Amino acid sequence: KNRSRNRSGNNNNDDDRRPQKKNASQKRQDQRDSRRSQDNPNRSQREEQNERNRKSNQSKNRGNRCADPSEPGCGNDNFPRNREAKRNFRCNNRGNSCNYHRANPEDEP
Image (tube, rainbow, N blue to C red; front, side, top):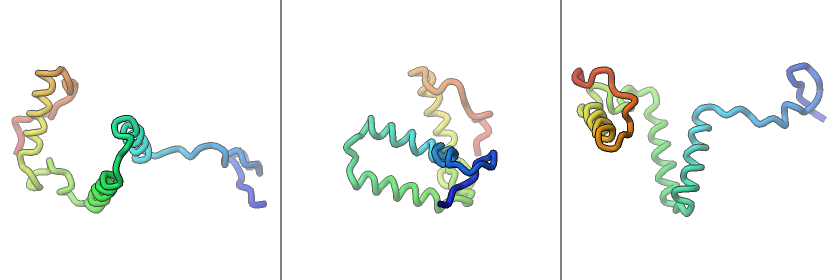
């Protein structure tokens, strides 16, 4: 038999029985999946495919500074200002999203 050694150097399979620690993206995916199972348990194949396509396109943009729409000179120049205005509206009218804000929204490009 091919057995792996654990940290103490013993030849047993104790480490094989422990679940692998999840990284941040796996944890986020688990959260999304559990939310979806509650919000939309009968998700269609088309919705699943749209999600896969969205994530594929997102991963293709890694390393591209314009992947972030708030980056000056990329995409919608009003994105950060609009995002802050929406957050401010939610805070003032609903009491949501009040614990954070941009450092200085007046300095938007």
